Length: 362
Image (cartoon, rainbow, N blue to C red; front, side, top):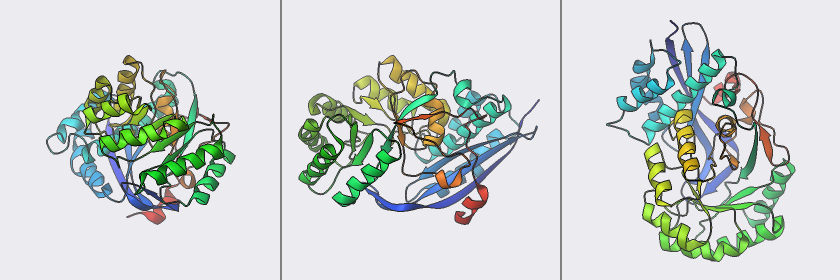
């Protein structure tokens, strides 16, 4: 019987072409990137990854090599659900989310990639398949951009094929955010899909006030208006803010999403496949959202997320994130008139340029 032979991790500090900024993380000149390669006894290999902003990647690496690897080697690589549970309970006492779930996510993505490659199928088809054509939006990380920079970035996004854009909010004074959103709305036109992301900057009352001031700009959603721990607060923002709410990038378990969704605290559930538990849990979050008649969106890691959203009947729109791997993959994602298409290559279809990435290895 084929079994898992090895689990190999590597860690990189990847520079960004532009220094980004948001209301929580401040200046972001690079991102930390951890890859996992799972090889089986037949010589087949799957790759997964996760990432961190400003800190945390060393912990992911340590959890995988120090704890998760021992529950994987020698096991059947096709039993992904069992392996996920084995990893979850191995680090449950010290983790149950956070760093532990990010580490599990990277391995889980690699296991699904391995399984699909062994079957010579694109992952989105293996997951059931729905529609390979996925609507996308450009996720700007631009809180400290000047207004001319912000508008120039919007023009560049449109030129690159995007037909929906997200911008940051959470500046020191709400009037600044309002002025910037007004300028973007006037620049893009009344019907252009526009989102605003506060990165948990506000209290609940501040978020409601902001949402009401921003209502005139017809936002597709207001993202992370307050901390994800405040379920009741999110419910208030949804009900009293009069603007749809997206949240989820800082929610790291299926149970967090279940609680938030059931309470009515989110309009667009927004998991990040690299920290919610990987492909296995992203799919389950999508199922919970579907059961509550909610549209599913995503955060980050668009190169692999497209595979899962292409298999989700309640897929709404996918974020194309600023932490891009375009410089380091053989086939960068193509955006055409606001859509991308999940590739037909086996697995998730991501082939990294290990030599070029090696320049940034830690």
